Image 1 (tube, rainbow, N blue to C red):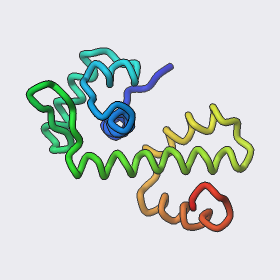
Image 2: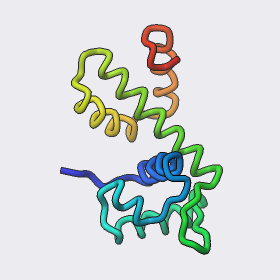
Image 3: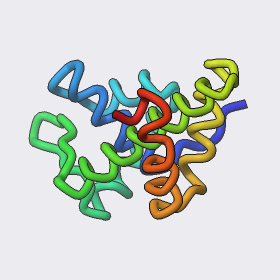
Image 4: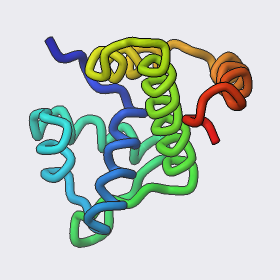
Length: 126
């Protein structure tokens, strides 16, 4: 069962697609996230109103500096939490799913402390 993607997940997906394709439209995002065009349209509208995303005259999506910052932070959380879980023996697929859940509830303060704690113990944070 898929959960509703949060705005942070949309920003992260746009960030990753931009790294791959350099130009991203809402249809690319819908396909990548396996969401309906309507769901993506609502998310894009919300992100534009929040100042995290812009859309040019050709309908290409662009992250604002604030949107890119959140996307990078979200991506870092997902990568590091997943890697930490794998490092302690959790199956890779489960670790990735759990990391996405944990990333949405852990505070930035707690995440930074975890990252520092593990920095010298595992190669994932270096």
